[in-house]
Length: 339
Image 1 (cartoon, rainbow, N blue to C red):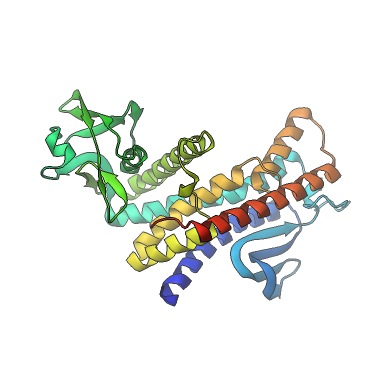
Image 2: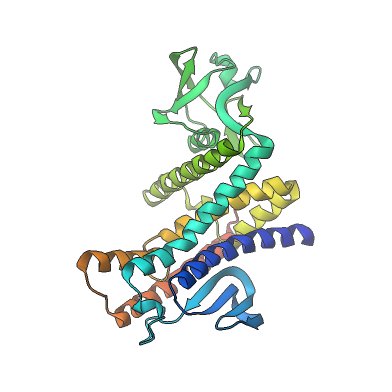
């Protein structure tokens, strides 16, 4: 593994973290909250620069980061600039800003990629000779509308739908010259790539700047949908936990993407940025989603929650997250994702 590619992967991941934390930081400042520390990374401090009231730090472990605001940890602060003394809507805006920034970064990344490469759309541009698609009579120009009754909006959604079948037959609904056509196809496995295919290629559409941005939003919608589909199947035992990766997998995938070129790294970064946003929005104390939940509860009941109780819940949530990260990291080491 080249050190250069690893550094590029670390840089890309750092951009996502800095973007996330900058969202919290700038909205906190706009709401006159005192920010005590802006850190990239976790663990021991390697470098710190003291600003007017905020210390900007780089820490030893290149995983995550945080913005430390006065009154955020449930400490009793009477300062009007403390996070815990702000109105629920202000706290909701501050805690939502991080995930929103990750979504914005993903839109920007996808827009750049699609402006350069064009957009892969689920319209057949080529059918491989003697492939399952060829045998079943799929034609160039056919538009993939549904897979097993589920609507398909992007090429990525189609690829995931094929992969999830693990070689089992699937039903394709196609639009062919204004008429719907249904085909039943059994995918075949490509051993060297560890994936299933039916033998078709997507069409590549050149896009304007506006269309590129619109495509970015479409990709995010598609990723969010696929993520929750996967989580639902994971918790119901329909898919294996072997498909779950942690920090080590993130760096392995990012490093491999960097080896394939900057656009590949940008694509992976966009996907990871969306995943970071989704993860942080989960309603778990210590995550942004936990703070959002607390703020929404206060808005509904019309009174402030007890700071001490909130602090304890966040501590429990933090311990849970550390345990989860440790378990996923151990899984990464013992049972790494196949790339």
